[in-house]
Image 1 (cartoon, rainbow, N blue to C red):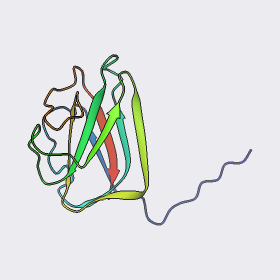
Image 2: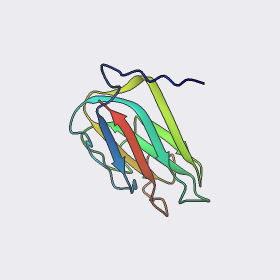
Image 3: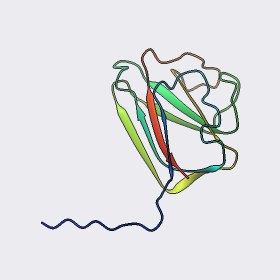
Length: 122
């Protein structure tokens, strides 16, 4: 079997954001600008029995427990979830995220163990 590698003229993304401890403290405007997310990975493997909710806002900052997220991703305990956005998920202000143990807006409880998040943006 032959393997072919084709070089791309323009990469899908030019920034890799990694948060090794996504929790109830908002990671505000992580890229410092508007952009588009193409790939998101949420690693909840250290929380074997705990579901977590990774939340994102198109905003420069967040008040966790008060502000409504624009996107919520549920990750079961002991699992890693990868999500690809083929056309991209555009943010006009900035990428702000946090991670808690309930899907409700008022949730402010951090996961027990570290949740690692990575996303590729422009």
